[in-house]
Image 1: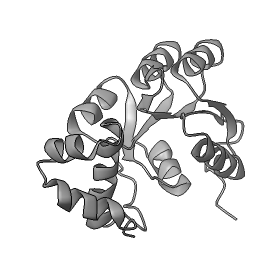
Image 2: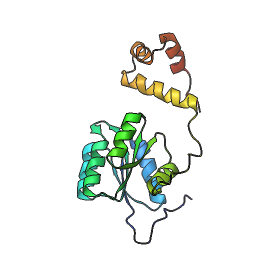
Image 3: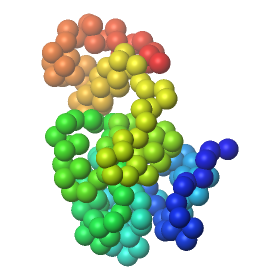
Length: 184
């Protein structure tokens, strides 16, 4: 069984999980409950803002890109309502600019998907200048490349020619990559 969170007795263990990927959200909620958090979930920016306004949690894990907007909007509301809240931003669209923006508005860390519950808890509970330990099973470079190609492909509405143009890649090369299974 996963380790329980290490907080003082009586400490607020409330956590908001905000993600529009329903299966991921359910798995993460279950994992965080097993670790002793009091979980509340939201699948949209609107729902996340409502929870952050009405019942600001001590912790939050917020997806950056949601169907109805940007998760950073929820981080801003949460920091306004509860400045001591510890927020980790999760995203499948990692970029330095968004990482800087997330940290500037109050996030304590920025993790790329897929992040597991242990990595998220480590980031949430890291104090001061302590960095959480590196992940036990980081994605391989081939897997990161494949994930990036898949993201761009989806953003281009699964248009191979447009995706190839944006990735500066030959269309046939892209088709061969898309036809293969994802690397580990």
